Image 1 (cartoon, rainbow, N blue to C red):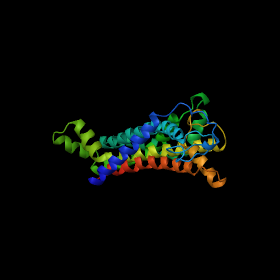
Image 2 (cartoon, rainbow, N blue to C red; image 1 turned 90 degrees about the horizontal axis):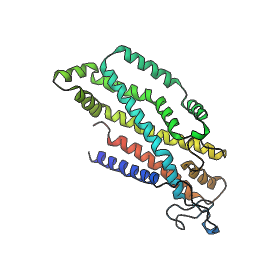
Image 3 (tube, rainbow, N blue to C red; image 1 turned 180 degrees about the vertical axis):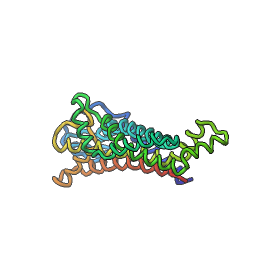
Image 4 (spheres, rainbow, N blue to C red; image 1 turned 30 degrees about the vertical axis):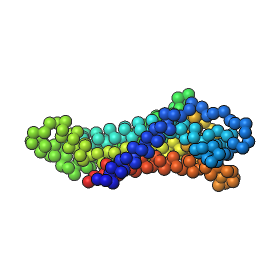
Length: 275
């Protein structure tokens, strides 16, 4: 119990930090400083994270990147959670036609190559309406069949329709049977874990697409040009490896933000794991 409480507290604290970064994000980066000493300033010179090559605080990169990721990632996670719950509950209905239909749709969606579908969807979105949210929802839709299958397998191990009939015979209401006994007590670990994994996957999706855009000096599919992604931090930091620029602090910040999102996903999963 103590480990679950610790994991829940850690997840809440990490999410609060990410949310705070997002809501304090500026609409644009601050103007470049004219002080040569502020170029690539270290965290000790410009707290808390240092500056880029123009002397702009890296904190603003972290804030804008959090703003880009947090909303779409949460939306995708909630979408997968809802579909996962639906998959488990439909297995408890005991209708073979519904099971066959869902299984067929799941096989079709599961057979699609995710990254190819994402790139096609990104190209179909008008350049004036580009953002991470539609891509995140497409990714969630492609990930949903696996989540639904796992939730349905858990419901099947419970007994499916027989489990519902047994509880109804003891006088429990439909809401208590489905929402409490099935969802809250049995499907919760699977649903939350699948949602947390999709949240993390959407974060890495944004980083991957934005990194390719930064490397090719092109507009990103996931955010307007006025915003900076965490991928900008990683690209800035990796130049320290290849070109020897003094941007190790940017690399550390980018990896730290990725680690923060990973902590949210993993701690949430641990907090709700099955007893």
